[in-house]
Amino acid sequence: MIDTNKIKEAVKMIIEAVGEDPEREGLLETPDRIARMYAEIFSGLGEDASEILSKTFTVESNDIVIEKDITFYSMCEHHFLPFYGKAHIAYIPNGKVAGLSKLARTVEVYSKKPQLQERLTKEIADALAEYLEAQGVMVVIEAEHMCMTMRGVKKPGSKTITTTYRGKFLEDKDLRAEVLSLINQ
Image (cartoon, rainbow, N blue to C red):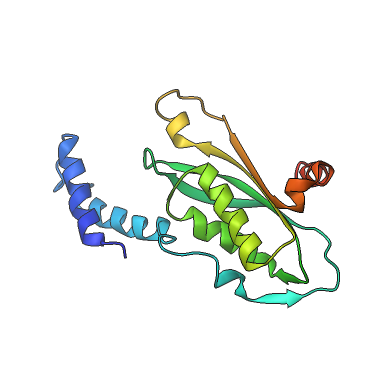
């Protein structure tokens, strides 16, 4: 459970620590705004996709399902700065599929916590493999990290791409290549 009172106090201390007056009109409500924002952007803490992916539909064909360009926003756990981008998901059903919105919700639940892009990629793939019992799962994430663009090395526009494969996608290089070509269209 997110403790918004602790967040408010911490933000007030940060405002003071950078040499500002937390009682100044423009900053007076900032601790409350940030506490509400953190409650929203960290709402995935302690959550997983088991309930999201529990409603499925029976299918007769186990053809590849791809949902690409799923926009997400997350927070880098190293600097507490945002990283954001697109997630691309492919899976081979095993007699059942999830509703397409459930794939986007799966990305959402794992991105809403302090995160590493590499872990986010793995958690999405593991959830689809486990809860859908998919024959194969492939997740590709491309993101821009504010910790790289607004501080430190300051390289705006640079993107980090992470991939992970499960099941048939791990075993079959041609299958991976086919899906990557569809994602890159």
